Image 1 (cartoon, rainbow, N blue to C red):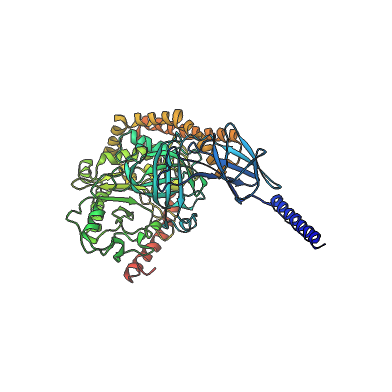
Image 2: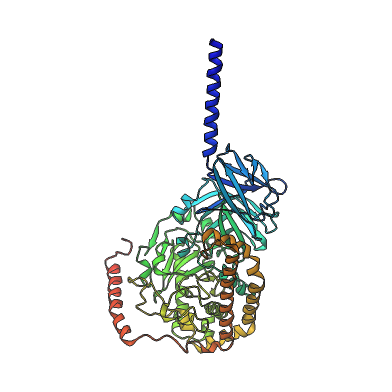
Length: 601
């Protein structure tokens, strides 16, 4: 009897467990489903895994599969790892292999849960896989300057060639673009690498182009600058980016502006200054005018109390025109006597002697321009051809930020100042809704950047109350500079622009269409997930940019001498009324200086 009772109890227990197991299987939902692929040959040391997790958009699931993973044979991983999963009716274990070849969709089942997963595998560009050490982007996204180590794998468009695999540092980048949902990043590799033939350097940028639905504006401008022979133009290649297995979208991998071989190949003043001092340069105290309002105060500078200079300090500088409201966030810089803030790209941390030298040098350039000195005299200080090239490029692009921000100059040892390299064109070619300065930047038949004025250079923020012209506004009123610009256009720049337009239209846009489709689904760029509809919208977007670029090129070919002939006019009464807030701003600035408040807030 006892034996019979024991058998009955054992059977009941087993049935109960089986019931519980069955119940758990029926209600289990997948928290993740991913596919991955091995490297061709041996896996490189410190490589990031070639893996992509599904993306959930409402009731829809997507797998964005790059050429580096492929579709023929992929390894499946899911969470929970012990779940009973089928793919298209066939059981698959965690770590099992399936084929996605020829499939637009798969059906994944786990218990009572069923997932229809669209396969997006049309992209034919290179791919970048990054794994942060924390497995998250939370710390990096918390603040732009936050940096984290990790692993990276960069695979060519063929899906097989490993451009680089190893360790990296990653952090956020950009100003307005950093505030967008799809983030841009700066990465630093462990060693200098010549990625895709772009030049040997450690430092690279991943440009998100999130504000540009065509994804071609930066590409169009950079390639035109390169074709026109502008020195140190950023090199680029389109890539699909995956971070911690999540597909992040279509990016361009670019070289960064800096003193680093393939970038701006000039004397490394920062490196020499580091060698001349015992401590890290950022460990020394900041000095000068560096408070929140310092960017408004004409003729001021900020630097670091670094004790020693190298023997040579007359070159190795890269400076950037910047908006006053961003000035306080940068380590070193100066404000000209006409209100233009500059921040230091290199060196980032300057001694007082260094900031005195470069601020004084640029001030002489600004004075020569505003005082109407001859081009011969100006050329002794700043290469006039480089000024003309940069003006032509940005006028063609109708870049409303030109001469205000993201406008660079570099100073080699034993040479004059040069304008360049070119940078940041995502709001160019009609991609803005601003009527800044009374200009219509969305009309390619109009001259625009020649009328740009400074703004954000008062306590009234974006209000353009002082109407101070940029240096390029002043230059284009000078007939000899305009003649130099026409000469540059006729000597090959115009042909380079037309060549670039043709290349983007006939080759580049179609080459990145598959990547653009995936990006559009991931970030809902065109308010549809239908692949054919996205392709049509993407073509419409790229055709619009090409049309703008073609029309503006025609306008410029027909007469650069026409600039400044149709400048927007300010209403006389409005201009008089603006004198009131100008006076208030000037009083505010004087009070800051008089009471030594510049670094108090």
